[in-house]
Each structure stands twice: as C-alpha cells, then as structure tokens.
Figure (cartoon, rainbow, N blue to C red):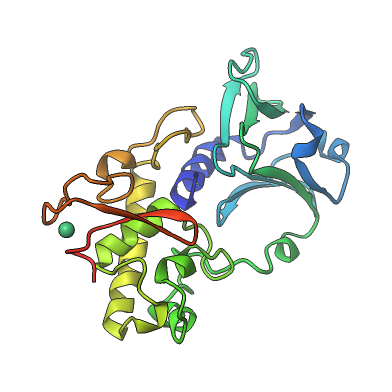
Length: 268
Ligand SMILES: [Zn+2]
C-alpha cells in the first residue's frame, strides 16, 4: 500500500505541473468519487496552485475552495502520461487532461482508494494525526499518544488519527530499527524506547523518500516506475529469511488483522 514516502515521491514529481490548467477531467467510474462538494465541471479551466500531501492523501489545490484529493488505497497508482499517449493499463478511473501536454492518470484495481472534491481542506483533514516528519511530531507527542495504552504499539502507529502516513511497511521497519516488538502494549514503552522509536520513525520515512518509495507489489511512482526501498527492507515481507542483524529467521504474526514482521531476538 502506498504510504507517506510513496505519496511524497509522487507529489514531488508532480510539482512540475503546478501552474498548468485543467482542460477537462474524465471520470470513467462515477463510484470512485467519494465526496462531491462541487461539480467536477467547476474544475475545468482552473489552474493548479499547489500540489501537496497530507498523510497518504494527494491534494491538488485549484481555485479558492476547490481541492481535488486522491487516495491510492491498497493498489492505486497516480502517474503522468504525454497527452497523446493512451493509458495502457486497466482500471483507469480518472484522467486529468492538463493544458501543458500532460495527462494525469489515476487507477486503482481494488478501489480501496478514492477521489474527493472538497471545499475546505482543514475541515476535511480535521481528524488527521500529526505528520511524522513535521516539527510538531516530537518525542513528547509520541509519548502522549502511547502512554497508558494497552493496545499493541504497532496498532497505534497505524492509527491515522494519531500519526498520519505510516502504514504496514514503515511501521514494521521503524519498530525493527528501534528494537521494539510490535505487539508490546504501547503503555509499556519506557521514555528511552519512545525516544528511539521517534528517531527510527523519522529516519525510516526519510530513507523511504530518498529511495523513492517501496514497490512491494503495486506501487509505482509518478513516472509509473518502481521505487527502490524494497531492496533495503530489513523485516517487512522477509518472513523466515535471516534477520540482517542477528541471522535468526524473521517471524510473521498478525496484529490487528495486519501481517507483522519482526525479529524475536533483536526486538524486545
Ligand atoms: Zn535479529
């Protein structure tokens, strides 16, 4: 599933389209539109003021109070094509035709993602947790959201209302980097553990962005190409393979319905 580093990678590549105008938007499947606070026709002729990310959402800021928001769900892709080219792939739900010779293509075979036409961004994101790479995501904040909680620490890292943008891959990798078992009750972490985890989360996410995301199955970047972080995964998707630190086989368990990878020797 595309997480913070993957969506960030896409957003950065899309920046070249800021300033371009929308000629028209082709919606191939109406049910992919999750919310329409205005008609899609209102976006025609609008210029892209900004393209940004919030959590795992990709946001196009158009005119005043016109935001076109995408989520890639489990298997979604968002990429650029020259306007003369036809998307070769199936499950293309939206094509945004720009006046700079580029088409933006959104596809999502499993349709866990979606498209939102939103007036007020702040209201739409009001329940979203803090951005883990922003200055307000401090070790103290992490401590505040973990303390007294009996839930496994991994569940809380995945809770988008507490921290936005972390999914299964980067949760497992961050916990490995911090040496903390994913099934530990969150409230049992010491101050030292929390500081380590805080550093690890930021480090792993930054590495993910630097390497242009993780292509485990479906993810492709804005050029429809694979990321690079999959070659650096230490535990995620490495069930029964040797731990890169101690050589013991990596365990896989289920936590909160999500498959979870860790080393019983290096993570306590
Ligand atoms: Zn190990």
